[in-house]
Length: 165
Image (tube, rainbow, N blue to C red):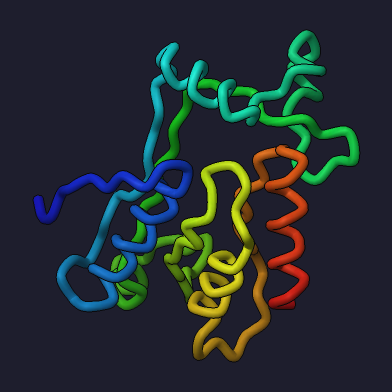
């Protein structure tokens, strides 16, 4: 029972769903939300990412090492199907029912630099991290990166992380 809708934001869809759910809880619209996403592989996705030059080509015969974010020998990602969900809950609601709390989501940001699907400028990532950290007084325990293993994307993302931290 309660609110239900879906978002579409390319690779950031699941993260946006989690942020939107947290906002709904923060504003009192819901006490508990299931948020996340999934993707069923369709051949058109493979063709599209291959045409963009984003897929790994040098390690496909060794799946355990094929997708290697931030590695010096990275050459793209390996496409596949998958999904994941988080249960987000109002803190007081969770305490009242004796829930085991695994983590707190204290910040979230959503931006786009609009530069290129596989060659972002990094400016949007910098703004996004600043938004997520706005008002925080505690050290950050977890940083969720995109980590596509693409030669240009990883460098740009790490540059944004360095700029913020």
